[in-house]
Length: 449
View (cartoon, helix red, strand yellow):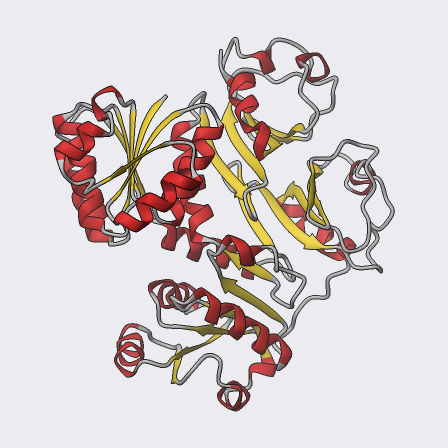
């Protein structure tokens, strides 16, 4: 596919590299001269330096032959112009735009009705709030993703030495949850990712992603060895859009919410927007302030300032002072691997969330959801099985899935299934497939008729 990406920030660069490795023909437009030069040295794609909101620059990037335009600059207005130019002037059939402002999103959707193209509006900050809210529902989870209309939960846990899963093969899940869809989907062992088969054993200190039916999540948490946290206070560091919207989401629930913000104007604006949240003015890395607001009684501390290095420090400090769990907003790829090893329990990456939302529009073949796990080494794809595709042509054991590609679950009507090699995928089934990122292009091959 010929794809034009506008914006060479973290999202644009990561997406360009990923799609290029999948075999797509990529042009990446970046306005800043120095950044464009650096991208040209790092990436094996065509890099165009210029303003992507100009038709001449889009032409130079090959938009007239493009099947997809992805606008990922830091400006909503630029992204809207790129999307509308791509659709109305150049007749591009598929448009993906990153928009943070809900009014911009509404306006773009209204204007788009006059043009015959498919479009997706991606809001990574809203996706981050959704992911954090999901994490708060599962004690001690390091990551939580919902699939199959919320029926299936994929949750990541660090396996402690006293867990019932230690030294058990992954096939133990079939015994522990007989008749229930439950599977070990992926294992991170000291930085090496494994998409396991039945004889792979779980070891202490593994980071394990489990896929399980929502109604059995509490049983899984018990076997992992997690103790239910009785504290109900959630403390949020930073009156960013993510911090405020998370506080709004939590208000009215059973959690007491405290928000810390250093800037007096932002603190006042947050207080004006929130009802029951206690807004405290101060630095999220101020030890005396955290002690004064009883951080040691907090169930979860969420560091959500715009400065992701400060988020990491604030999360570490909150944990050291007694917070039961720390979640940090971090988009720096070099810092993501620190999760679980330096005291941060979970890291939220809006960059990876934006990439997942974009990929589900690119993958095709009935794909509904794409979720890169942690630093994008494992990819989970939810798709509708299409008649005539390889996965519907016989038993799963006869499909010839490459090692490292796993069919984890099926949703057939209202029935959630954990398939074995003897089962068949039927046209119309929702299929959950898991693979290492370097084999992600194979998933499309299995799903395409």
